[in-house]
Image (cartoon, rainbow, N blue to C red; front, side, top):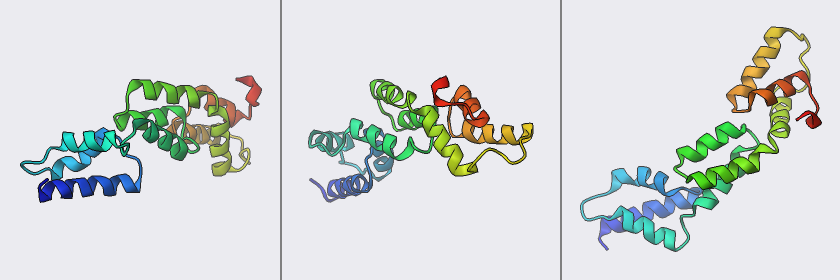
Amino acid sequence: MTASALSLKARALRLLAQREHSRSELVAKLGRHVQEGDDLGALLDALQAKGFIDEARVAESVLHRRAPLLGTQRVLQELRRKGLGDDLVQRAAAQLTGSELERARAVWTRRFGSAPAADTPQERARQMRFLASRGFAADVVRRVVRGGRSDEL
């Protein structure tokens, strides 16, 4: 291996030590550091064969970190942006769908605490925009803002 290949491997391992990265993320981050004679594909294949790169772990990491803060659509968007396969995204969607109302309530409670003191259409719209911007579904947003119960879903 050349010195630049070792450097490329060191960069890859440093990135993977910080957090889980998908293969496509590593390609994007390491691509600008590839020099003539380096084989990024072979390096990533070797890291994947040794278990350093695992798409399922990347998906679980994103779900663990982001699902308590974001709606299903935003989490799935992040998974797609990381270049994960459709099967992993579909499994994550199935995992997230059942808990979206509870997660939206938790985010809403953390942000607003309780029902608005001035229950005006403008305040309700502001709260609905807040939850919608976090990626929660419109029906879930309406239920949370109007104070619906979880058994209404």
